[in-house]
Amino acid sequence: MADNGISRRRLLGTAGATGLALGAAGGAAGYAAAPSSDGSAPAGASSALASLGTDEVMFHGKHQPGITTPMQSRGHLAAFDLAAGAGRKEAAALLRRWSATAGQLMAGRPADGEDTAVARDAGPSSLSVTFGFGASFFSRTGLHKQRPDALNPLPDFSSDHLDKARSNGDLWVQIGANDPLVAFHALRALQRDAADTAKVRWQMNGFNRSPGATARPLTTRNLMGQIDGTNNPKPSEKDFDRRVFVPDDGDPAWMAGGSYVVVRRIRMLLDDWEKLGLKEQEAVIGRHKSDGSPLTGGTETTEPKLDKAGPDGKVVIPLNAHARITRPDQNGGAAMLRRPFSYHDGFDAKGEPDAGLLFVCWQADPMTGFIPVQRKLDRGDALSEFIRHEASGLFAVPGGAAKGEYVGQRLLEA
Image (tube, rainbow, N blue to C red; front, side, top):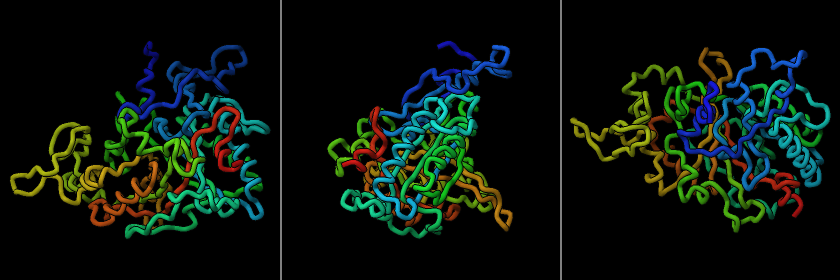
């Protein structure tokens, strides 16, 4: 491929670093195809911007988009509750509308009906839309017997300071895009589609590094300045699907090809964190801040030498270091695909930043993914002193919709 300012690989940002695969890419021009009034290209257009805008993720497929899609620079997470009187029939109609709208917008086309035109000048910009069901959805729709055991409530953790109003929900939506207007346009379109059927319970906005912002693809950094995502499972690994997706013969059958997502709003106590010196911060994490390499040496992807001792006889990577505690081989092989967004919601009354991580992780079963790892973190992670879990949700995300189907159809029309 010719280098037109920003290469295809560079545009994928962290994809090369995390090993995630783009669902599909194409030349959808969408809104951006419209020329200026004199027939020329729009003012300020460039090949780099055109390439970024035309990246397209496919809506239809075995899995929903937004799981193995490379992390986008803008994201919105939202939960909806069904309105009083709305049941299975109304929910099915809503998912049908939502699926149609998502398919249109992800292809770079305006939504059916009265489109707000917020994204008129942009292509699909790697837009992805993902839908899920909370535990309460099944009682609201009379589908109690179809509720997966994996949706049992998460246990309480000592680091929890949860706001119930910003947790859980009947329906969950994840939106990601590499353009903020494209992302907002999708959020607004889905909220309008919900109409009188469902109302927003909570909504959160996030961001990541923009594709092409670094000289080469790198694992993203969080707001503590730490490289975040080094040990993510990769699609190239033979057990990736087993860890992340429900098997085709899984139970319940309607979840085949689906996944379970845990969403946590984790506030970072940045004023306290930034009081630490560099060496202290690195001891908390167990990795060098500069490049993510283990304190025992090597590169970001080098396996840490957990038994290596320093001149003082103590292990180089502290026993309560975050990197040690979260390693799959320290948790019976438990693993999850992390795909978070950072957030910043201003400053509180004390002048401290209300900022941190919208933690989003995917697994075939939370009992073998998130829960055992979080339990271990809860017992003595050095990072716990500098973070606070303020909201939480667990959702069943069914497999992708085939052409002519809508997401959740196998559940709602069984």
